[in-house]
Image (tube, rainbow, N blue to C red):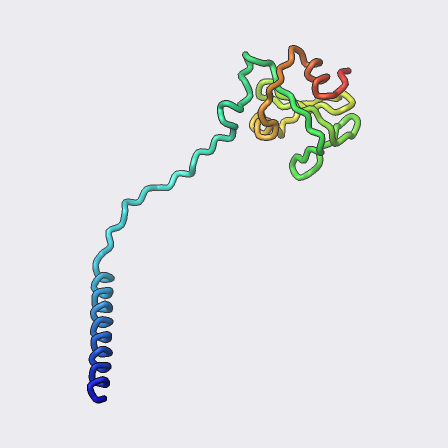
Length: 147
C-alpha cells in the first residue's frame, strides 16, 4: 500500500522533470537566431489575357474577321448597351476586324464599340469552327438578315 504512493510520486516527479527540460530547450531555441531566407521582391504573376494558342482567333492574314451571335443584352460600364439608331438592346452580332470590335443590331445598324477589345471577344466567343467567304454569308449563317 505504501509502495504504490511512492511510485506515483516518483512518476509525477519524472513528468515534472521532463517538462522542465522541454521548457529549457524551447527557451534556448528562442534565443538562437533563426536564419531567414533572402528576401525577394514578389513580382505579380503575368497573366495572359488570351485563350490558349489552339483556341485563339486566327491572324488577320488567315481571315478578315470573326463574328459571333449574342442574344442576351450587352452590359458595358454597368449599363445595358442599346443601338443608338433603333434602341434595340439584344440579339447582337459582334464581330472583330483586326483590333476593333463592332456591334450590329437586328435592324442592320453597325457601330464600332471602343469599350470592347479583341481580348473580350476571345473570352466570350469560344472556339469558332466556321469560316465564311464573305461578311453577308457570315450574317446568313448566324441568322441575321443582310441589308
